[in-house]
Picture (cartoon, rainbow, N blue to C red):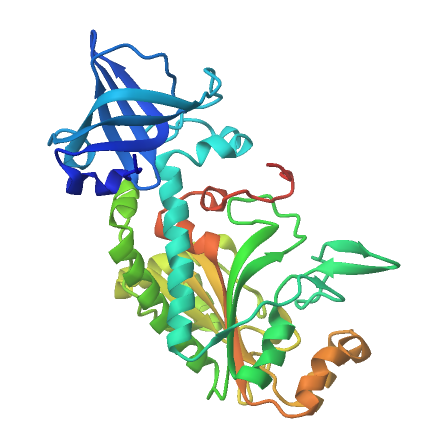
Length: 425
């Protein structure tokens, strides 16, 4: 008998069908058992009038007749005539994945990720993230971008500094990629518009609710731009499409979190102006050249939402020394760059900007950062042979998901987190 998924049962009323999945919950009402079976589309209620030796998380096949029942999930249930145990689960579970909201601590849930991910609410977050990635790809394809796949073992970190993971590479040392930045820029000289969805690695010793040492980066780079605002315009258009897609495809998942997709029309505020707002309104002092701290990010978002209703804000014109060596300096504002961050509900989810496209300027900037241009010859070659004005950005997928769902820790929006203390599962 062919398997029918839970979401399709309403179309098979009165028919004899087979459903397969995991036992999500068992209710025993004095001789009548209700088995809630979980599959990839949801949960179906199966009614048995005989005893059967099963436990939560057993994998089973249930055969029976589909009938209307408004009180059951999906408005239908199965009057079961037989239950076949496909695989037995151990009867003692380290946590109960069938809870509406996991009560296990985050550490316990992450220690037993294979089980906690089965919780419908936890799984819903991963579904939402998957649809965000789908829409990211589709939105950029519509705009003429080509998807690329760049090396993750590299000779040097794209962002500079020491936050790289060394890798023994035969007789020399390589590093895990901090970013696909150099390769994205090279490929602008080939396709003009490129994007990548891939993991990146940061050896930062930050053990906070907002940091991961491996995360999923949604990157794009585009040529023939006017300035960094062209890149921001594209992100606004893209995020609008991404959130609209999630609204259409993940209604039930969003409801599990009481989440709503935001309107995407962020104001654009120079960093120095944002710091002055924070000084006047909240008494926070910043030294010239400083970035915002986490509290400052939260407070400027609070201010923007109160003033404009927007949950997002672009901060622009970051100081030269707070941006990588490839960032375009602002030609009319000494000391700042044509760069930006996008903050969402108090958390940075995007970093981007215009890049230097002139060979000599880029080579000199690499040297000014205390690096040897000879080490970046493969990167510089693309600029020696002509590069258009270009720019791009990177969106942290886990941070974006966490903010949308109002999660307190970015690890909740990560399948298998890697941080300073976690290497398994």
